[in-house]
Image: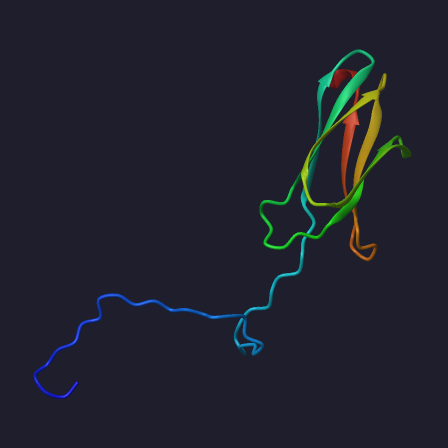
Length: 129
């Protein structure tokens, strides 16, 4: 301002009225959706059974790809299939009647068949009971 007057900005704000169709040249692209992080573990085990806990955590992701469900294989044979259409997370418990040593695999199935399937391998043996 010309002259001896002084101006002071006390408060200011920036308002964006709506989404612009113009893309800024240096603006980062939106990250692609990711699958939830899957963990699997045996919790309560007895002489002839075990409880398998499967956790699907999507809290880390900005955009989450929907999953169709998961499958549980015992010694390479399908033992259980749990559909979760459009599902993205949660905690699931599965009781399995098993004796002895077994290899258990949990496979996460995304809704998009072109995405990579995630899996977790576990071993259940008498020594782990």
